[in-house]
Image (cartoon, rainbow, N blue to C red; front, side, top):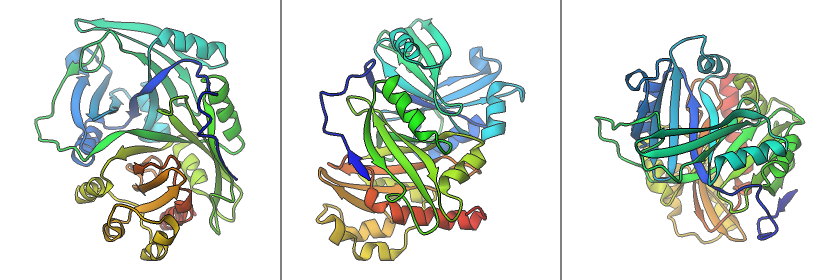
Length: 374
């Protein structure tokens, strides 16, 4: 079943306004080297830093930015620190999906009143550039949402961080904004977290995919996509479905040791340039066989891009009633087969590439087979 409810504009009433993704924070084992990777491979620029030199004695954080996308790469020095413990259990992964709001205290109180579990009470940070107020709630696994109110701040990021630039030249690759973030949860937990986003955050159910939509001969999963009212925040939530062999969701849950963020989709206006640059810089992508392109144009119709270039770069194509999209998926970007990226260019389409699911899942299964986990 593929249920689209995107056009029910006006029906949705958010619990509180969300202006977009403020930042995504990763807990990692070596923040300095991870930050270097995102600069050299993905073209993010270092804009701010927090660590011993700024008075923070137990952790270090690098703030990276490309257009509207902001990543924080954070590590800890003491193996007993909660960040180090998180990395020991999960490997490098996403800890915080931060949401930019007008009033962090109000968002936090309304979320808790509607059933969210508090992770951090509202606090206001201040320096010579103004104030930033934050507050956090728990979501699936050990992932949290931090509400960030920064209307009264003119600094580079927030109090506690110092502006910093890398001595090396960093060239952006055309990434624009976070399109969506996908969470993997345990069997039977998808509807619980979909209900959470609807009941607590006021999100609407955007799309539903069942195991007939997302399956191959061997594996399957189910997914529901929730979105806030303005569509700036979209969270697909996946859970395993019964199949002959271990699905990608089960593999993720095994390696991550629980629920967490599976992949981050980042948007570009020129996917050919972006993917060309990523490949040149050493980023690995899932491989889809050339026979995918034999009939893809019959399925998607006319597009602006050169199909030869898309085939050369292994970029997938799909179409919905609003237009078409181009997408490609990296392999995991850390040792454990957990977090990976989707590069997406939307030419009107608002869907998620349903027509590519089978080819994508077969590509993932080939990687699972090489790891011996299929």
